[in-house]
Amino acid sequence: MSKIDELLKGEKVEWKKIGDIKEIKVISPIKKIKKKEYLDEGLYPIIDQGQKLIVGYTNDENATFEKSKYVIFGDHTESVKYIDFQFVQGADGIKVLKTNEEYLNSRYLYHAILNFYEMKGNYMRHFSLLKKTEIPIPSIETQEKIVKILDNFTEYVTELQVELQARVKQYEYYRDQILSREYLCKTSEKIFNNYNNSFEKIKLKDIATITRGRRLVRSDLEEKGRFPVFQNSLKPLGYYHMNNFSGDKTCLISAGAAGDIFYAEEDFWAADDVFVIDSSSVVNKYIYYYLLNKQNMIKSKVRKASIPRISRDEIKKIEILVPTIELQKKIVEILDKFQSLVSETKGLLPQEIEQRQKQYEFYREKLFNFDDKVVNTHTHTHN
Image (cartoon, rainbow, N blue to C red):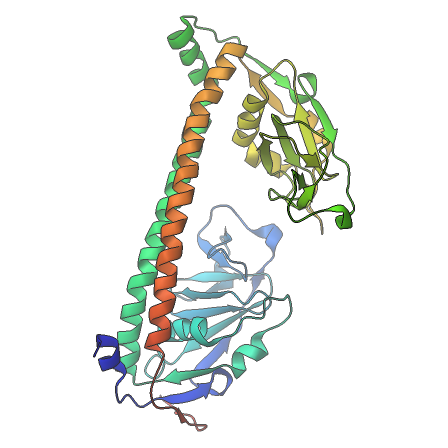
């Protein structure tokens, strides 16, 4: 008999709908922070119903939930989060659940929701469905043992995710350093024996053409085809039998994921929410890396609306530090190697994360597989 079987054998449980458990309270916020008021840094983290754990910060002490243990449910998105620190609610759409820990371990509730709640995957209100979800409630001692086992898996997944983020940040740091004037001058001296600090900053409109793509009717697209079609995100919308641009181009999304940048190695079709940047005097991939380096600045020029947009005029004004062609090619060669390493990391670590996540889900299902199903409609009251 496995340790899990031993743990669950003979355990008496109550099965209750979450909405019938009086020991779960829905806590209302004192104040909600609007998205436009989110800060990049601040005293208090902001939690909303998106997939990211922390979406921003605020310094508004009057809006905080006190430090405690909470389960957060995204009413529209069905996201489930566990929070054990002081935080502030961002915008609408989350339900903040707090349990009586003597009866129901909040971390146990978190794992139970992940196991038993059936996601619908559509954008509507789902809290009523969560309240109808039945979960087993064993003794508090058994709850704590289950939490300890499952947390070992989730902690390892979290560690892998942190490692992945750290490697990407490290790449971004080195990329930014490599594209600085100081580094370009040193590289010019070291490789070409020519110290040159007279590199010009030139507006993009003066070194490249900026062409808007052309819309395709969705019915013209294919699931598989020769040429990828890019519309308003970094992922192809579909495929088409023709291309309207050759490869070796830098592309900037103008609407939707406005400000996002990608480099097209091969021929492709750009739709009308894509600006295609092409230069005959500057290495195109150097432009791509330089724009990536200025991504935050570019994003700051996006007009916040129901559909975020960035104008061609804003793109034209972006200034690029332009060294010699030889140095541009060398910088591209260096950054290509960096990006290859990051791509390898992004391939291997997510595979490991996915495997560990499946392992967690497997054991979670086994740990919630109680023999006895004792349906109990009355509730316990604990003072």
